Image (cartoon, rainbow, N blue to C red; front, top):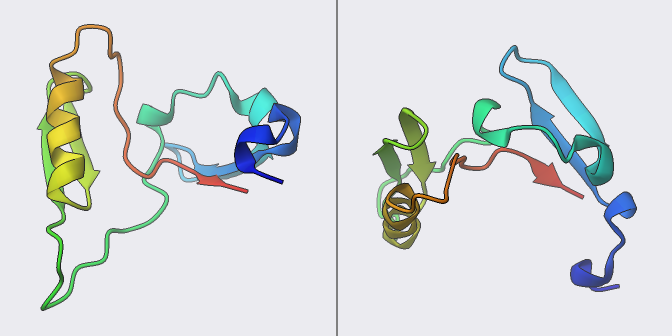
Length: 97
């Protein structure tokens, strides 16, 4: 089954809350979670000879740093940060299964 065809009730999210508690549940129940306030689900790999540049972007929208794994992601963060309709940004906030 294609992910786009999967009913919302079938998708499960897993994330770590700001207090460090691992949460898991169906997308339908976790829809109201503000993922810009949860911990990053995984670290960004960094090693010598890496073909991409990881880093942290200082966002005015969320008042903190948002991680990126490539310059393309960083450029998109900049565009989103200047969009007045965007109210939050998050990087790797959850796992989807």
